[in-house]
Image 1 (cartoon, rainbow, N blue to C red):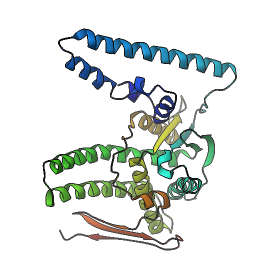
Image 2 (image 1 turned 90 degrees about the horizontal axis):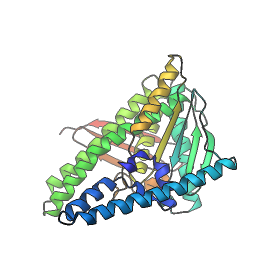
Image 3 (image 1 turned 60 degrees about the vertical axis):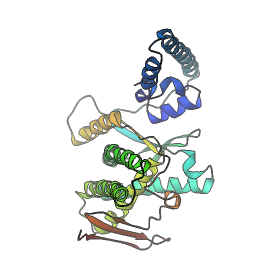
Length: 322
């Protein structure tokens, strides 16, 4: 579908420039619906499609002319050199309500996420380098090592795959709630959502730490577990991440394979629409990241607490007797 041909940042830009309707992911469904509703008057459906096609072509012509003018002024998009990779965090303003202090906390979280991942993967907490900034929808483009970007891409993609299952569960839960069912049936579905997220968080933690041999394994495991849980909650509320990689045309090294994996994952990621009732994090946890909750499922009960100063971290996983 047309909307799926665009990256999240491109969809944001198109929306800001007044062309969202021409790249709506549901455009094919809208055309199909119009045809079905006007089966006896096909000219109406034909008019709808022609108006859409004409408007889209006019919009694209304007964009092409604007792009050409920008290129003539020397304003072009950044390009990656072979063997390089980057990632960009698109932070919707609804997350920080256009306030500076909460926005600063978002940047701190991104920095901590990259540092924790880099320490687990490379043995050293590396500082990511700022590549670009964009202000319409705050977009933070960063340069980091290939293993770090690859691990974040892997983790995010695993969550997006799990989100398809979560969306189906939410839909079923909404349908049975609508017909008046409640209690155990609804609670079971809610618990299944929690269990699904917990499983992805644990898989992500194990993946990032699989080759770590340092003395801070337990502390890093707790940090990465909290980082990924908060990251997933941010994605549910509209955060998107774009990954770019430019594999060299020749060679077959481990790093080249990592670059290709990043590039392949970037092409298949589809971030979810923001639900009306996000449930993975509370508003306070989104900004402050002080996740203090007991997650229960049929398999495990996980308790994670973090002091306000970040000086103490405690995590314990207890096998459930259910």
